[in-house]
Amino acid sequence: MNKISIKDISRSLIFMMAFALIFVFLARGFAVSSSSSEDGMESRITTAYRGEARNSLDVVFTGNSDIYRGVSPVDLYDKTGITSAVSGRPNNSPEMIVKDIEDILRYQDPKVIVLETDCLFSGKNPSFTKKQAAAPSPTLFAKLRSVVREADSAIISGINFYFPLIKYHDRWKKLKLSNFISHPSRFYAFSNKGMAYSGKVKPYTGDPNYMESSSGAVKTLSAENAAAFKKIYETCRQKNIRLVLITVPSANTWNLSKSNAVQKLADEYGLTYYDYNRTCPAGFDWSQDSKDGGNHLNYSGALKVTSDFGDKLQNDLGMQASKLTPKLQQKWEKDFEHFHTRIAKPAEKSTGK
Image (tube, rainbow, N blue to C red):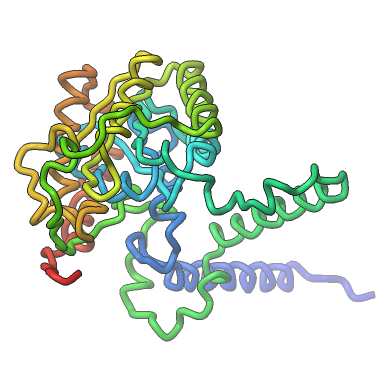
């Protein structure tokens, strides 16, 4: 049997090291940029807090599409020095938010969680179908299969995180030299911090007094949503997190009946509640600040809500600027600059229906 020489071992090690360096270099180029839509909605608006330094966020906003269209964390930081992120999803439900908050607390230790209240009147999240609700309790085999699937998903997510070349191997047609030279250090780090930016302007042309003209009868929360809200409250209370309720302007989906219901809930639990439909932020204009005719805000509208809410965080809730290391301060400043130079664009006016 031939003996393996030190020379052969050295050559093998050099080869493996060279291969590893080439693999890492290619991976950096193939992985999407921090503002790219290629990485999917969940990473950008639902779990953006995972990309921030652990326990570095003092505020986390959660809710449905109203919240990720309605506030801008980088602009809140620029105004107040308070760090935050948005964790929202379309058609979100309180039941799903309970799970979202559990995940948030694995990565962050916020002082305040801000719940956008439109989700309190949602039906079950689409992921909870009638078929699933009516299904019998899962068998032991079904439970084991579910565990295996979750494990597979976690493994795949981990592989994609550390080896983006595998996930994005088909991006070679879009590659540029800059993809290999400059790249963010964290795969899930997004300068929008969970906000879904829109510069589109489609005015709301309905009744400007939509709150006053609607019925003031208190709307009733469903039993499921009321129970889930109680869980959200209890989680925040146990973790010594202040829960704050907020409703961003939404002329087509909000009314006085819902607002009264949330105010009643806030009074019952001793919570602070801000309804920006009752008192709009300074300078708010439905002809300029909606992206889709009164359902959601565009960036102009979100800026006005963010500015006003920043004042409330400081003046009403007594929050001070977040305590960050010089390195994290520099990161937030760079994210602010990146957001305003690479993501935020001039408004696009639309008068179509």
